[in-house]
Image 1 (cartoon, rainbow, N blue to C red):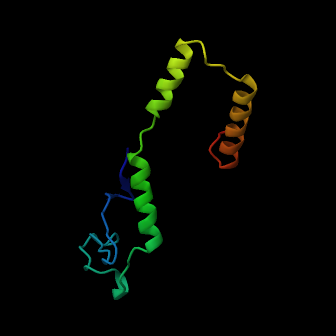
Image 2: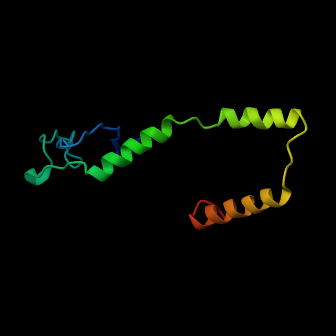
Image 3: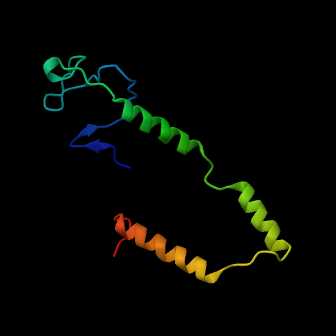
Length: 108
């Protein structure tokens, strides 16, 4: 993955609420910039952004696979109790395709 934009190498920077955001260096001159952004204005993270970051971390910590559901389905298959509903599967596939294409996620 290329992490350079216009010759400037990018890197993630951790910012916590209420702290000013400092520039590492001036893109035009390459000189190190002052600790506060141009104009002396402080930039801070909003409460909404903090909540989104917290939610993102919580979601990232969730398992990708529901192990209990997989185990229950596997047991039902082994015991011959699992009944697939082809109409329900088809409906969900069509709905998923529609949602992905509506969100711009599908290439056509």
